[in-house]
Image (cartoon, rainbow, N blue to C red):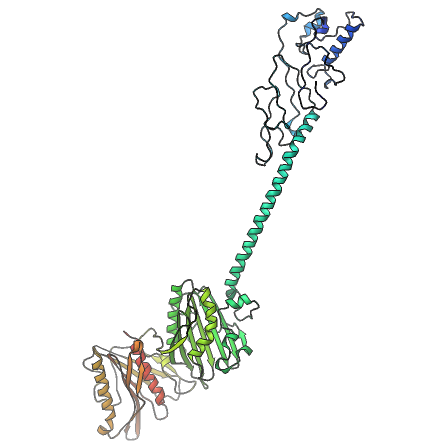
Length: 609
């Protein structure tokens, strides 16, 4: 016997005593055979009642006998069954137990359908999605199967003892008791599942929090690195970090350059460009990022552009193109007056001085730098010619310091400036239009022919030799420049440049000296000629090439007409250069302008191979 709501299967009832007779022995109530109302009849009645209440009896009311109705002393035949043939009860004669065929044991009673049980309590495949280490559910097995494995969790499914030698009655376990027992056993598993889910949620929150923090950090770095490209270059900075990354010069960097208070100036980013350096040009690589700034104080201004390229090689190529543009400035009004090389400021740095020849001259100090993969273009514009390359380099050092870290370039250290030759253009060895000055302020435009290998020179009539047929040369060439758009210029006003190349510097020098001697003695040979010697020519070309020669103003009178010529003869190593211009008494170069032009011609020749 078991207690109420116990999960342990009930034991089979003990066998009836052998003296139990008649139909009562086999579970038949023979009420019509005159059984006496004595003690034996009471026992038979109890036996009949208990058999009638068996869960397997076809006539059972569907509920097992209560513990009050059963007692350990109530004998029940071991072989009694509700499956006894109907003929046995209808015969009225006692059955011979020994001759009766054994009846199979009763079918086991299974619990209610799985739907009434928790997902993890006894299904063959647990409905739980949790790992087995957190909630283990034993597979369902028959209570009567001796081959079923022992449950590892006795609280969920009781262990079944080995089958007895004789059939036993099915366990009398109520559905409510079994459900309550399994529900109680599932509580720890549910608690473990809840704790596991909580831990998983905490882990997910930690992971998501870490990812969010990392994303914020990366976004901050990218923002700082790209700040200059996404924000207006001229906008005032409100962050110390942004200011530290600003590659452009600031009013604070300029200090009192040119004697001006740049901090009181106006800062804009209106797309202004430095002189001679257009935004686009042939062969110029495309920059990944470009920023610009203009700072204005009165009529003075500073224009700064910084272009960043994909790599150092691309930036180097872009720098060379920009340097050639600055050295040959295509601006119509520009006159290149000087150039400098700068060391200690960046990986590469050069400066070019340009004068815009208007009614009032405008002076530009143009600086170019390459710091790693960044190319900087800086133009300082003033109304006076008193800003030198060294002052501009010093003022830009702070911005170069901000560039060198981000672009992996050389930072400023021990800045020094030296005079240099303006960079050569597409035709090295020849003057360019920006080398020639205007004669009338704000008027005139120089044009040039392509270099030719056949000479067509008239000369000043004082050279004595045929300039078109000089012997001993290895090569000759000529280029002619003509001035347009100046109403004051004489008809056909221009300049001829001729270059004679020799195999040795001595031959070039001999030709130069012979021409200078002939020009100096021209008045002795022609009384109508007048020769005025101008400033001597001295300079240095590429790789330290020495430039030397003489300048002259020659006039020839023919009755009522006077013709003037500007002449220059000079040598650069193995080459001799001859210059001739045809001014008038009212339209002419100054002596200094002519000398500077002659020096520039020597510098250009030194750039040719």
